[in-house]
Image (cartoon, rainbow, N blue to C red):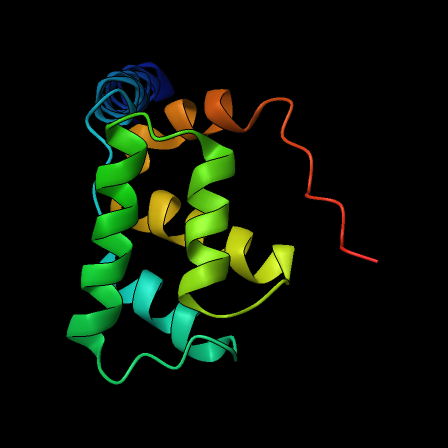
Length: 124
């Protein structure tokens, strides 16, 4: 009958290597997920993109604006204008999906830009 000590050592080694690999892998660059973006913006009504290429181009345009540090209030206004809506959630959802799925490395920049944002007061 063999001792359980070698098996424990092997298991500990495997778990150690896996932990190191997971720790270094999670520190890698964030990657775009075009499929998730397309599914999310096509499932939510109100955008009406004619095809996937147009939806991706629009989302990547949002990413370019976030990267260029366009102020959040301006970005929200542009999306509301582009989709002829006053629905803050609709604009925010699209900006959020584009940033989260197409340019996740820019999430922090978007959050910093959005700090203190207040919705415009509706006209009476």
